[in-house]
Amino acid sequence: MRIQLAQRAEADELLGRNPLALLIGMLLDQQVAMEWAFTGPYTIAERLGHDLTAEELAGYDPEAFAELLARKPAVHRYPSSMAKRVQQLAAYLVDHYDGSAEGLWRDAADGRELYRRLTALPGFGRQKAQIFLALLGKQMGVRPPGWREAAGAYGEDGSFRSVADVIDDDSLARVRAAKQEAKRATKGK
Image: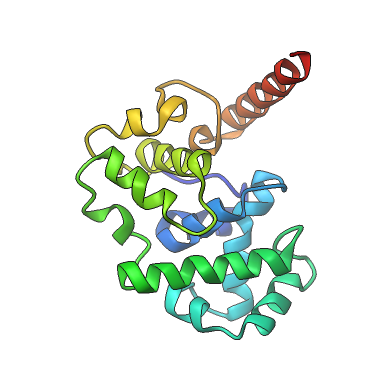
């Protein structure tokens, strides 16, 4: 399946072929529009002049990396703090998975184990881990036994709750409508 989260062909192509880019896009997906977050890895790669690797990002000078993310157009609303988070994520991958984002899920015995691995990542809490797990299962074919259960409601077939469910313009509109409805319901309580 073709990834369509950035809603920009070249950025989505990178997300589909580079697991680190997809993981960084998920990390950046907070307090900004989904498209902006998932375009971030492409923007970083473009500024570096080549594909992303965890080793390079982890070893990059922190001040220079923050400046790289802050250049106009900024990679995120909070480029300095997100630069730090991206580098922490990259360093974690280097330390625990030989720099391979795919190593997170390659040999996961089941959904619970993959969920535990995701929640151990810097910047990934329960909800982000469940959404990314659902994204892996629904769009990347990563489906260890019990993945849907570990992803919680985000893993439900036919749902439109998160980026895991965005595959085209229609599904994007449906996810946005569901999020607006959830916000209204929360305000009403």
